[in-house]
Image (cartoon, rainbow, N blue to C red):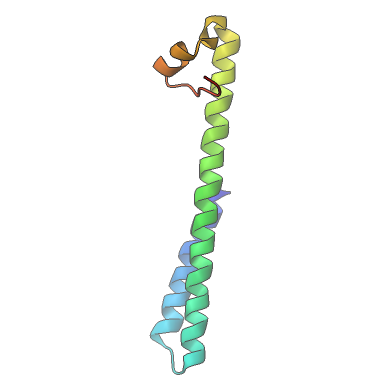
Length: 88
């Protein structure tokens, strides 16, 4: 999903640049500005989706490691192995 959002933001940026380069009036410049704002929203959405996916994967790996190694419940052990420490 984050790849689709990132690609859409790139396409929207290119469209905005094309509109701005051929602008003949203030309306065209405003339209290009709106396209750049849409680009920013799509890029932010892609970043958020990617961060959520990374955290979800990291938490799933931590849970899997905890089930495989019960002594991994120790927060110091999780810190040493790069796991997520939910509570201290």
